[in-house]
Image 1 (cartoon, helix red, strand yellow):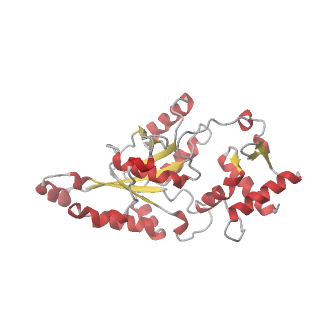
Image 2: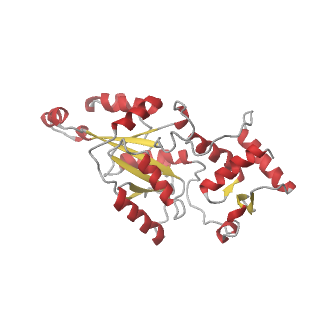
Image 3: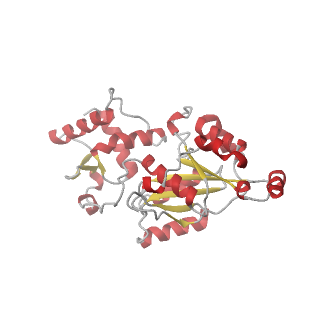
Length: 310
């Protein structure tokens, strides 16, 4: 196996700190590379570079090559760093999360879009921010800059009285509420601080910031205690996003801040077209003609599409 590929795999495993399916390595590396968390990416060509990477890993494992990682589980095959191999959790089957199988973080986006619009405390339209479309910067410079999703609640659109709407537009400093979302497939005690501080870092431009986890282990007292302590200090909210049934919930409400960082908003706008377009949609939005903006935000799927068994 190429030394460069081995180094990429090692970097991925060091960051995620847990076993991963061989078939998911390529996609996880791509995600981390786009976020600026690893320095290089696999250079396999063709239409299925992910399969080429998987095949190379299987071959190296079967040949018994000297690798910094090993097979931590047979079915499905998981790999993990050798330095973590003594931890019993690596050789145990993790309890599976019921419901829709989510292979990548972006598979969570439709569920958050639905929840954000439906939840009484949020009531916001969302937009996905594609990091890969951003203008390139020196390595590491944009790490933790881009939120996964952004949202807006049009507070003035919820007012029914025309005079009150006109008054709010003229005198209210913030007729809208801007929200930032950082999504994670898994939040555990091991990665909780890193996930939380990433959410802090990429939400300074917003009024509220949320860390969103897929099926957060609310029964884990250590995890919940840590999240509550971080929330008390920094105010980033926490959302438990459910994909098995319509029971997503805000575990900790984000603390609202009036003062937002316009410098970061400007930087995001200059580097990323989706974010720039999002701001334009917010500015142009007219409560009297809401349908005109439907295509400018993420599609809100129907409940029965997302939760067919509900």
